[in-house]
Amino acid sequence: MQKSFKTGLEALLRPEDSIVVLIDHQPFQFTNLNSHEPAMIINAAAGLSKAAKIFNVPAILTTVIEERGGLLIKQIQEVFPEQKPINRTLINTWQDPNVTDVVAKTGRKQLLIAGLWTEVCVAMPAIQAVAEGYDVYVVTDACGSVSAEAHDMAVRRMLQHGITPITWMAVVSEWQRDWARTETANQLGPVLLDHGGATGVAFAWELQLLAAPVPSSRVSTAAKYI
Image (cartoon, rainbow, N blue to C red):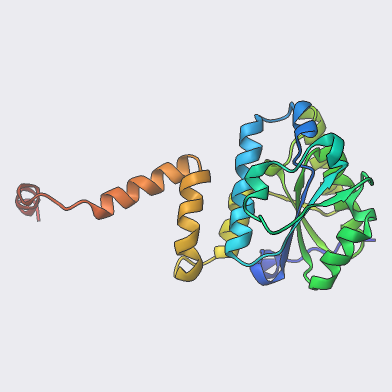
């Protein structure tokens, strides 16, 4: 099936059209994760999860044979304490109707996928879903592989199928779109502080500067140059 690419505003993510599927962020997968520093992937996955909740974007959690591979990491599970991950035996999430039926019922077509590993449990459902008419985005910094080459080859392969790679901060920015949307902006601030890395540090500094009173001596000195 030939992918028809959207352009302009239609190509950007919208919270009301988005759905997130988080796949196999489990201990077993992390033991052979060599493409990224694990802490970076955990941070990105947690930030994406918290943002999804803020923007009322449904998030589907799924694991593979969790009784052997381990439970979903707490950094994701604690964001959705009421949700029991869908436990699969199928390697390809998109062949499990317990997952796909839930996604289909939402009617949402902007599908964001992240998981471990990129070359297997992310690429397989992404390639199948895009052929079924979904606009598929892979959140690459919330994914990882057994090697840097495996991750890179997986992303390249998915590009050939019309799948869009994106980072979690880009996802959040497109969902927010306008800082005047204070109902979500105010909630997003703490997420950026906790998970935004240097962006969070800069944001904290900006808040400090905005809150700090200007000493009167500095005002008078500055006035000489106006």
